[in-house]
Image (cartoon, rainbow, N blue to C red; front, top):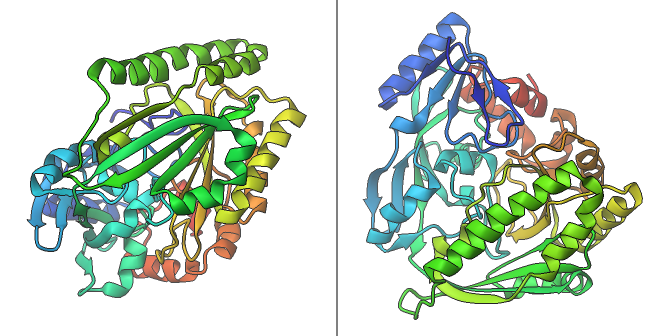
Length: 434
């Protein structure tokens, strides 16, 4: 009996019949073929950081941890080919010596490069696409056991589907990522009144390289983050070791973890606790390597739902969420996070064809009541929202087909690459159909 699988957020679990850790593409092919012959499904697993069941399987689980690191680098074109099991946190050691960096990152780096890109991880920055937009090639093991190269030159028509394929099209053994020259970020973080933040959100998103804000429900203020890109030769002014430890480990993890635990046990205390947290929010400014500014260590477990809405809809949607929380008297200890991204042409990207604002709602993982998520989802869906593929949501193939112009093209790619649904699971059946 294999070990039962559970994701980081503890929202999903499954019991695979077999777990394999392939060390080569050929071993992936053998596993896929054997699973197909015996009537089992296959799912590759990376860091298990998705909040949905996108990686769950009662068939064969492929542990990609043996396929990590650099395959090759093209310095002239700024491209690297990586094994699919490479974690985002491993990339600085690979890219920095090459003078390269990712064009953008989210605030968590525990995911694998394939897990992050396949589910649509995006970071923030209206002039920049999500991580999957940097995928220029991939080596794919299809549902028929074929090793297929997808790139600008080979099977190019499949690239908009494969780059963000939610695990439905095959096992991505390698991916080739278009990088940018290494750069520094200058970070400015400060509290601001929520109404001022909402009134200026679109403008600030257009004039700042990377703009986002957090709002703790039950408070009138938000915390803004403005990150400006600098050349690598600029003077770095990083946070000191003690300051970073105090901010990230003591404040963001230890203290915040204690506050959310108290709020989970005593919901009536949440508004007062949130106001206390908001009142001690202070300004800070520093410059450092891009990955050190983008990434924050998150040790407090939570559950998350995130929707991408048209950029201009963000202020109204957040105001509706605020009214709903007050009307329903929810006690929400985790902040609402708001970001943005450029329009792109990936078939299942939440930013397909439109500039997008992202609104994420969270709850402490021990809080079992899901009604807050249901009501928040109704508001975000009403604003033409598209759910993040790696975050909790209740959408299905019927509703999603109306949201994505390229939905049918993606299904056609799925029929071509996995005609027998070797990579299917309950989540994919719900969001894509049989």
